[in-house]
Image 1 (cartoon, rainbow, N blue to C red):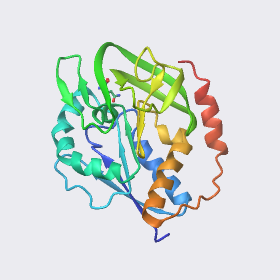
Image 2 (image 1 turned 120 degrees about the vertical axis):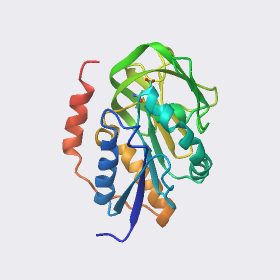
Image 3 (image 1 turned 60 degrees about the vertical axis):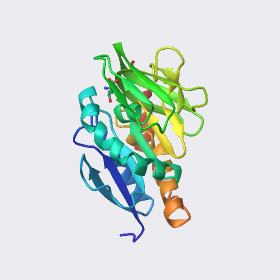
Amino acid sequence: MSNKTLTIVQLYPQDMNIYGDWGNTLALARRAKAHGYTPEIIDYNPSDTFPENPDIILGGGGQDSGQSIIQEDLHAIAPKLKELAENGTPMLVICGLYQLFGQEFRTNQGETLQGIGIFDAITVGGEERLIGNIVEESEEFGTLIGYENHSGITTLSDGTRPLATVTKGEGNNTTDSTEGARKYNVIGTYLHGSLLPKNPAVADFLIAEAAKKKYGEFIPQTIDDTTIDRARESAMNRPR
Ligand code: GLN
């Protein structure tokens, strides 16, 4: 076992973990091992003590009700999360937590959930759910593949960088083909699925940034991705 550890913190797995989002944590831990690191996984739920030195932060999606449950706690740890984000800690937040990493989420029940403002984006609950397989192109990560299921319609502010441009599916909204958001080493996205097993470029980014920050360098190992490539090919060709 390598003595180089990477601490992965999973935010709110009790309330924010749907469509296999916890699979991201498993995939990341496996991939970190394959690159020569020892992963430590910490689940963080409301009112837990926030871990001292997280190296990577992951968070999943949830129902509007799950977002409501964790909102107060999320605001309590927001200063810490913002400081970590500004200092380059890699983070991946999916769907419900992506929405709450924006400025606000107005639900279709008329509730406004304040976000923590890492992304300059606003989400409004719509009448229609955007559901189905999604494929998109990202300059940083190439083709990304996943599954979306949300009623929230997200609009990025002018200066906010999307993660990708959608080629199949909807993404942030039904009008501008953008999907997700990028800032510092933080990735926000609607892609469930789980995302990381199907998109190892994103997993490698999170591991590389964490390793560079903690150990000053990242030396990637050669990993045989033949099975992943086949799974990607098949997922990419599924009907919407
Ligand atoms: N409740 C949010 C929406 O429907 C988030 C859903 C999710 O995380 N999948 O927009």
